[in-house]
Image (cartoon, rainbow, N blue to C red):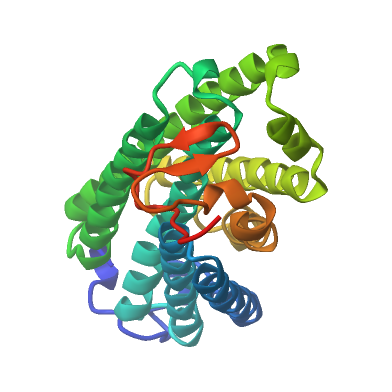
Length: 306
């Protein structure tokens, strides 16, 4: 830590907990709870990915869950010693970037919704959604990861602020990406609703399928909770290190922990392999969806048979 606490490595009469960046001992109970939830979801996501062969979706979700587990493990370490540099580095880097992987899993869905309900209703070719939004998410991930690394290893206030600004830029970029994604998705839904009478029978039946409806509800819920989390992180980082928001653990538990748990549970319980089969169907070369030929150029959702 910068200033008079440079040499603090453990809690003492001088190196008090209140002088740390967070100003508190991270809750052992909350951190352990989040580790258990994310570890369980990671295992379930891996099993579902293997079962349905949704390789890219599985990779995004399991990497995100792994990041959350490692991040909260860092907070467990900090519960024992709030001055521990390793614990601080683990949690600041991993908890900052992990939700980007969950956002990536959400972005994957729009292309397949477009292919399922009609590319003619979309303003962009279906495959563009994957490349544009995953590309933007990757850029956000790089900014946040680099910022987290710089901030976690900083030896002076200036370097730490540089890391914080990089993380802030990455999260702001992520929110902008989420907003643009919602605008394009909402526009597509509106166009499909206006042309509902022209949908194929299979597409109309899918809209009535309860599993698919639950998938959509889960997808929207995950989107909203991740967006809320990002807005919270912007407010937290914009105030500088050790600000009132950063030192409020209750807000962190709810707006970083609980909302991300809700997102991951929705993405796990309403898995596309079960609730939205069209997202995992792809044959050799090109495949037939409920509206005809599908673009087989993307690797994110593959299955060897219909």
